[in-house]
Image (cartoon, rainbow, N blue to C red; front, side):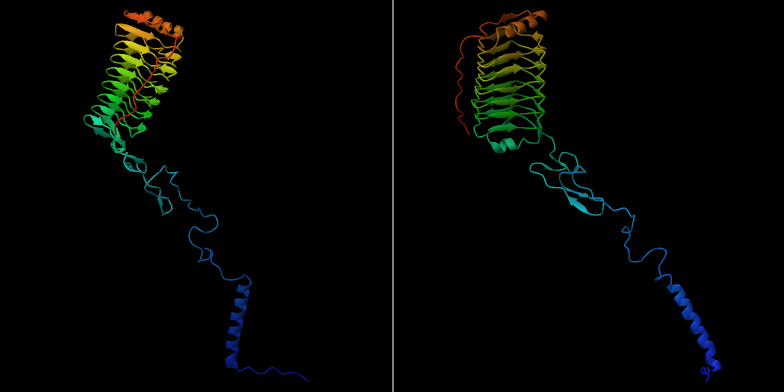
Length: 318
């Protein structure tokens, strides 16, 4: 017995054939997997696909910025810190660095307390003199930007223990340190010239004196009763306009003035320094005579004897 296929009316045959072709075509396309675009999936953000360059933000340190804000290079802003008054960000004319404008102070300045010292932090020049007279409330004098003093640098019977003026190159008049009982360290590494005299007397605790760049002193060079100083050195000093005097420095064991050839005063006095080898004093005398010095030499009493008593009054002031 044969099974008869149902008869499909003629009008439906063409419709069946078209449907069959469409289904077959869809299956053939499906063998290749889901439909994809040659450009890749639409939902992958720009710059995040395989092989795309990643933006690496800069840091404040890499950009040399210590204050203010900078662009990190990836569209964000970095905060690089703040400054301590009186400095401001960019105040020294360098962007994103703490600094302050170089101020010039006209006339004489007297420092009486910490506030008046702090007011000089940005100063590069004082046209007059800088005075510390019986100033007792300050232990350290640090003025990192001060380059020039037109008048004198004056410390008289203060309580200051340390002086640090690393940028100071010239003092127009005199350098005066008198009976500062606690003064132990004077740093003037850039000082090249003193217009008049250099005077140190009765600074009993002074053990460090940095004059490594000093070239000329217009008038006399005087160091007396500086009991704790082990070495007196000015390796670049070539000329002293007046006399040269070093005496009663108990701990002084080294005298170093290798370039000194001109002393304009009538005498050179290096005497009564019990720790200084007499040969060093004699060598300085010979050095000056070889340079045609015509004044008198007083070079005795070194290398023996007792120390002279060094006394400085206690600071009696504000």
